[in-house]
Length: 210
Image (cartoon, rainbow, N blue to C red; front, side, top):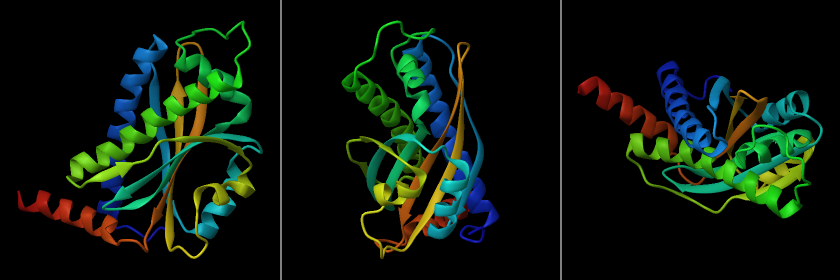
């Protein structure tokens, strides 16, 4: 779905996401008690079919995720995804532990840590888009989940007849003590309102006229 946005619109989205991810890195560095570097080496817009295929081809068989619904000038659901096998590493980051924890982490603590991580990343990305484009956006409380790639869309889409586009990002975490890779997914509902693309166009037009 490479023709969903023009080159300038796509570049704007990349810039907005990178700003949001940069803010997330600053917040996570404070929590982790060490520098956290976040990079987004890949961002693409996909159709439902393309995204479903990409999930099964690129994602590990067992996933841990945090999802958050949002609504406003554009609506949908965002999710942060990691291999389930690395979930304890994520908990260590959120607890500020440079080395692996010696104690067993219970399910409730793990869920709270992952929820907070997702809240930081997803909220920073969404709030950055909202603030820079000067458009209102509301977010719901995050939900944690475990799933498999072929079932992921069921987790993220409430209605099968929605006209949607999926923004898929690869995100790399670099810390002194460990490296992690995950994915950010934004399911954008095009049926509820059609202002996502037009808002980008209006912002770019304003820059040209300034």
